[in-house]
Amino acid sequence: MADDMIDDTDRDILNALQGGFPLTERPFADAAQDLGLAEADLIGRIGAMLDGGVASRFGPMFDAERMGGAFCLCAMAVPRERFEAVAGLVDAHPEVAHNYERRHALNMWFVLATGSPERIGAVVADIERETGLAVLAFPKLREFFIGLRIAA
Amino acid sequence: MTHLTLDEADRRIVAATQAGLPLDPRPYERVATAVGIPTSEVVTRLGRMLETGVVRRIGLVPNHYALGLTENAMTVWDVDDRELLRLGAEVGALDFVTHCYERPRRPPLWPYNLFAMVHGTTAEEVAGKIAAIARLVDPHCRGRDVLVSTRILKKTGLRIPT
Image (cartoon, rainbow over all chains, first blue to last red; front, side, top):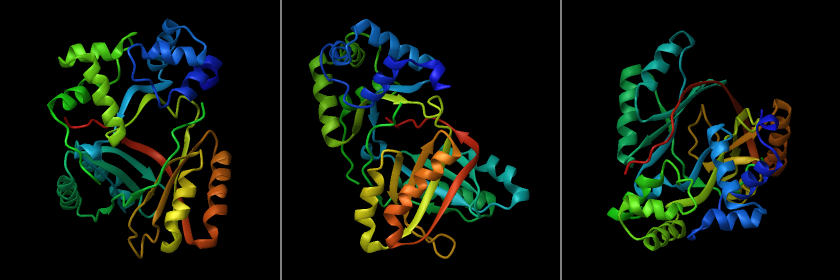
């Protein structure tokens, strides 16, 4: 658990560096100064948090949609007795980035990630044909601003 | 959604950094060497991508599960369309909401137009957070549901085509 894996300094780093990493010649040195740390200490701690799985990534977070890619949340109502087989068919598509079983009449929720918006419809049609089930697509119509931070 | 055209050098920077920045005192210099352009150009181009939104931010991504945020709930709300802009902004501003979107209704099975993802360390904590959203939207909300995930069927990292 988090309490065993990270100390207060790691927590400060996680809270301070979820965005705004400097675009400077020595960015770790600049960020470390704000945190009251040495450059090498900050680099070492970020590396340890990545290795330990406390942080999953460090670097620029790209917006795939602004680069021409597309995402779409989709859902299906899958009969209980066919659930495992349908999950296999859906998961086999490389465009399925993640897939969750959820407690609802719509019990399978997955996200498609494609290189172009046109591909979304094609993959939805493929999954409907393979499974014989309707796929409801829930494209994002508007994204509401989210604060950057998960409190660590 | 505006699609921004990235040129060849931008795409090489994306390819060189989407797995992460080098943990080196001069990370942009390392990227510049890999891409084959001057360091100052890497910095300028990343700065421009930040301004245009191609780069959302530069920093550290915490792992929700490792931080103990093991409970998640997809909360969905049928909000009066006339109030959606205001209420969506208010829900998105709550510090425990990690994603907040308007999505189309699919009646009759799915009357909901506002999606807000909530994370927490315990089911009770998540329930309290859902109640806080409800206090904001209830005056203009005709229905809601909470979908907890019972199993991860597939989870792969999102790779950006370059």
